[in-house]
Amino acid sequence: MLVQRCCGRGAPVGEGEAGYHPVMVDDSDPMDMVIRGYDRLARRWDQWADEVDPPLRDRYVDWLEDRLDLGSSVLELGSGTGRPVAERLASRYRYLGLDVSTEMVTVARRNVRAGRFLVGDMRCVDLPVGQFDGVIAFYSIIHVPRSDHPALLRSIHGWLRPGGYLVACLSSEDLAAGVDEDWLGVGPMYWSGYDADTNLRMLVAAGFEEIHAEVVHQMEGEDEVRFLWCTARRPVSVPAMPG
Image (cartoon, rainbow, N blue to C red; front, top):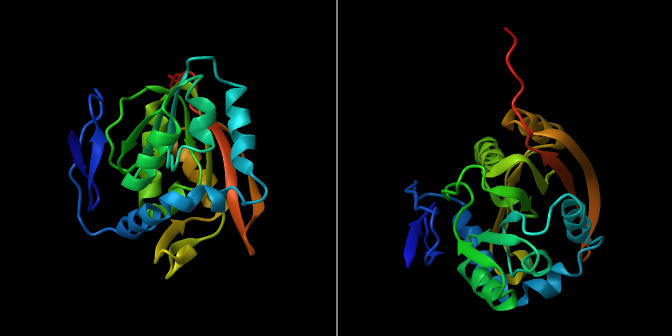
């Protein structure tokens, strides 16, 4: 089994996955607390996540499916337990899920036999350029240090085929680094992100077009949260430079 040493954690990337390569990076990283937290949550994550209201993941997956052909290639960043996204998509599309949590991937492989799942960090996994017709990132980029967001969005743009789509939720408020010391009873959890306007500018700078976004209020139990839910497209072709 290939092992990826990525951002402070050794993680199995998968067996026989041609085109996916390990990358060496610095060990000091707040993502360690994200990994530990989601490892501990894996067995009870779905029960909590299913109660988030309104359930926007289904709405945005509907949007993406309306634009994909049967058999298209889809990447999910932060695939969790495989539910509900991989469960919906893996039987109709060539689906690949990536998650930093080994325990989440273990559960996902059991839940969704038709999907492929890898353990790794979205910032430093080496994916083929122009491979995917759609990329999904729900509640995942918000756990990545925001200094890495511009480069990550450029990577996502590069992983998409020309004309491919991104559906994602991003932060809606300026938060350099936030930690809940005992999130959902599993210990510390980390978040980071920019305000909505900055996120939209970063999408444009990364090369996306046809960007549509909305800040939506949701309830997580008794807590109200707000995220920027957005869709965007990699241009079909690069405009010619003026002579």
